[in-house]
Image (cartoon, rainbow, N blue to C red; front, side):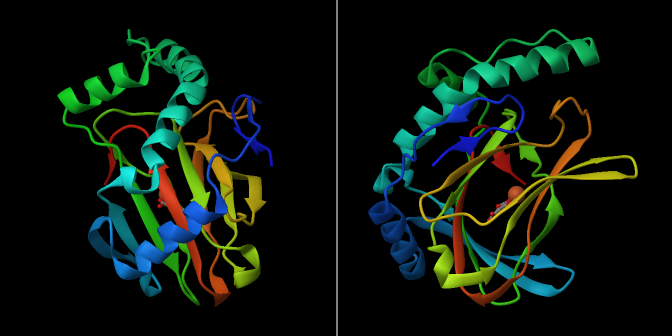
Length: 221
Ligand SMILES: O=C(O)CCC(=O)C(=O)O
Ligand SMILES: [Fe+2]
């Protein structure tokens, strides 16, 4: 499996999450074990997907995955930072080389990374959005597929760039079990465009789709 990072052409060449771990996370989700908050995403269509915030990522070794993700994404994140600082005439300190240093900064600023598991049943999806991050901003997010694609229909992950009236589809994909998809958060120089990045999930028409959403910076609000 190859997981493209849409801004840079960097490629993550292996899945870090085994099918067994994904099954375990999904089982724990149904039991509510390892999570501290449950909410329904309310959409225009009414009550929508179920979202539980993870309180013990170490339970499934997700902490290790997050650290690997940080090490892998820190160089393109610093490329983004340079671009952003120049565009806005700001001086900004780079993301540190070591994950522990980065976590230290986040903790000092009371900015806790958000990891949640989301369950989509029939009719559930997510409208196009870019997640607002409270605290330390990190320009990439990741989604881990926790369901076998044969278990559900619909539920495509969609990434688009919107600039003024222009809407450009970047990818529309069905996540496999254990697939990790990395994508840019909001404003990024994606494929030379400076538009705003939005992601969404098309409605599930059959079965159940579960994913784990990972942010490396602050909490999603
Ligand atoms: O389930 C997905 O594929 C996307 C989840 C998402 O966009 C979110 O949690 O903000
Ligand atoms: Fe999102």
